[in-house]
Length: 83
Image 1 (cartoon, rainbow, N blue to C red):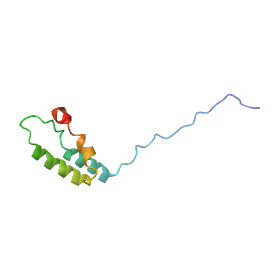
Image 2 (tube, rainbow, N blue to C red; image 1 turned 60 degrees about the vertical axis):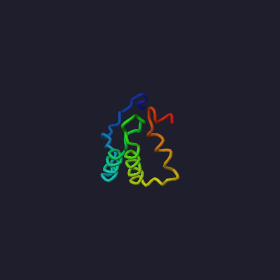
Image 3 (tube, one colour; image 1 turned 30 degrees about the horizontal axis):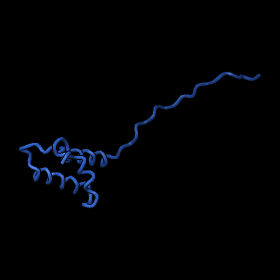
Image 4 (spheres, rainbow, N blue to C red; image 1 turned 180 degrees about the horizontal axis):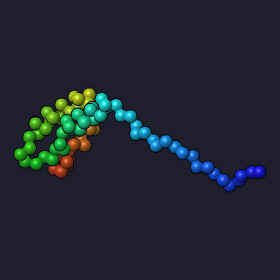
């Protein structure tokens, strides 16, 4: 006798969260911590001090000067964005 139409549900073990390398997590935290705030061009904010932070950040990321303009350009906001 055929048992057409009956379906036995399969039981799956709960999926495990992906393993994340501790070093990768630490690197991500460091990178986010060092990321400079956007430069707005407002009076009283030192562009020189901001550029030092940017240079340090790019150094940690190992971004060379030839390609640094793109990530740095995303950090300009408000008045500085329309220079």
